[in-house]
Length: 148
Image 1 (cartoon, rainbow, N blue to C red):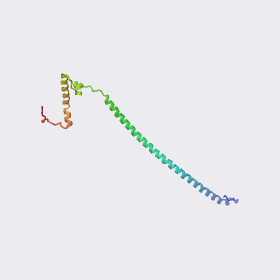
Image 2: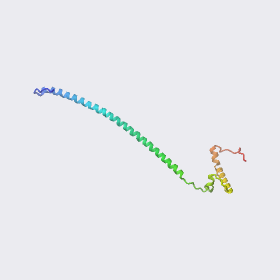
Image 3: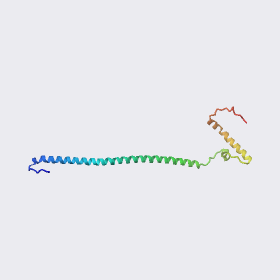
Image 4: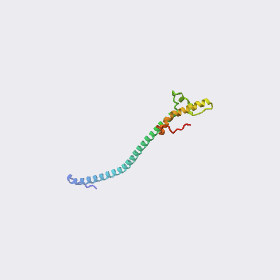
């Protein structure tokens, strides 16, 4: 619905302003519609992106936690394996190096049995002070002991 130009520029000027204002209003209206539609799509995509980002962070934290637990268990397993494969310590004391007192076995042969009994009692006597200290009897005088 354009008006026919009357011939002079000054006469056509108000019509141009009206047409330009209508076009401007229509452009603004269409731009706002487009912006609102893209904003709705953008907010849905933004929400999905934020959710994915949070899930990624949770997965990374859980992965880190699980890896640290695996490392702890690996160290524990190595320590247990190392302790299982340890060789007995060599000592200068021949009675400590002898495995007979450690096993607390008494043999059928009388001479070996007597030697094993003495080795066991010597070992237990050496441990007496530490056992008494652990039991809280360090300053015990032993007056109540009855010897048989």
